Length: 580
Ligand code: WT7
Image (cartoon, rainbow, N blue to C red; front, side, top):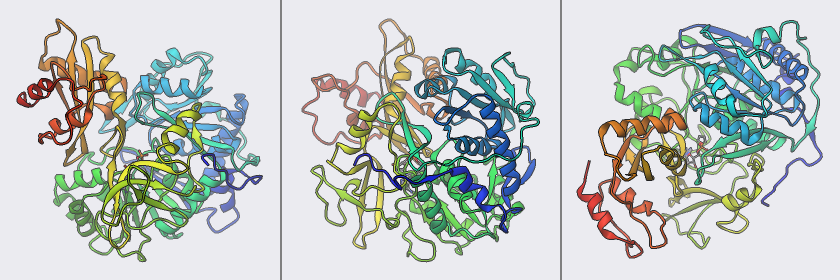
């Protein structure tokens, strides 16, 4: 540790394990993907067809001169070609980095430059709430400052007009015209990098979490098999976008390696009506549904009537991921969606862990609403105090994992120092998750949430430092501090305290402008919910912003704990008297 390796000397091809292994079996002509676009278009792709697609794209990559180890950025809507692109990268040993289509050109540019991608794969656009999200235009903007990118492959999805840059941009359908539909997969080392996925941490710069091949694949294959109890007769639907780790592990790698049939959906859950999910469950006969608490709470708010018009009798298992699920949402999910018939697997894990770590096994583990229950096979978590000593049952503490596991991240791309510091230095020799937790008297784990400077807004991980640096990049802003406050729908809402430069007038218009500015810099998911102008921010004598105090002000609670290190208490007093 902290550089664990698994299956040393072993070799495999991850795409072969997801595709070729099913050929020549009863799964060959079974649906791998049933796709529904937001406009309602449906396509079914069998394992054999998916194999053809992936082989062709692998040839396209090779013809472009892409080699094993090269990085490819994928910035696509949630369409089958996004999955095909990932698997084709794996086939030739190229390392994909999927960037969620909701991220801004600026965020895309930073990620491309950090990993020095040579190729970007995108689409003209994707459908979202009846509108086209213009992905190619965003790529064009990002690529103004990305010296390593030499080609862009563009899928035609929406048919919106795009500019194709001569010598750089190629249409997907033209590039693979005539490419052979067979491709001999080479075996790569068990520790060959499979993908980099950027996620937020406690500094302004996102972390490039690196996952490798054999251990990662084992982790997601085995957990998908046991936690989702996947059978050939199932239709499994994970509502996550492939831009997140959930989409990597539990749409693509964990499910395809099990030969599962999955549904993928392009658009919004409330388009054209808030019953879209339930309509789709009935239309296709979904048996397993894996979604996020924030989505469940949104459905609760939209009203039971949208659910009650559908039968939902095909469902047999429900899953939850992304944040702690509040018992009220759990009960609603259980009764309204699962009709008290379906177990709920509340799965705790992280981008870094690669695969599910704490989870019930459906039909085996007695459930408690709100608890992820017990560790998965081979996972040894503990709840400890600041000294690393295990706390008694019932007490809160920090969640650590004391033994390496096959699907753990191997490093942070290009920054092994940060990797060691971030995960392995809080307590010597053990992995620190960044989460707070407690174990109850039965040994069940209850996750409290992040205890570092990372927020979980609607299941999306947002670093406060990233938001702050976006704010101070605006010409009116002198200083900024971002904190979370509990929110019924989003889990946490993003509250930003801003001090303005001298001579700048505070106004509602400026608030709006700053919110849009952050959305523009990072992506709409990071748009602040509230901005509060302040004449000063509470700081320690050494100048460090005391976020703990701002959090208490944002929640409207009284200031608890030690304020003796505060430089100037009048700043706090004025913030408190100046409620929104
Ligand atoms: C953080 C990881 C893992 C895929 C989605 C998010 C929180 C995740 C749960 C859960 C309580 C959860 C944790 C974790 N989290 N699942 N079932 N119960 N909290 O991946 O963006 O890497 O975020 O999400 O705080 O550290 P991520």
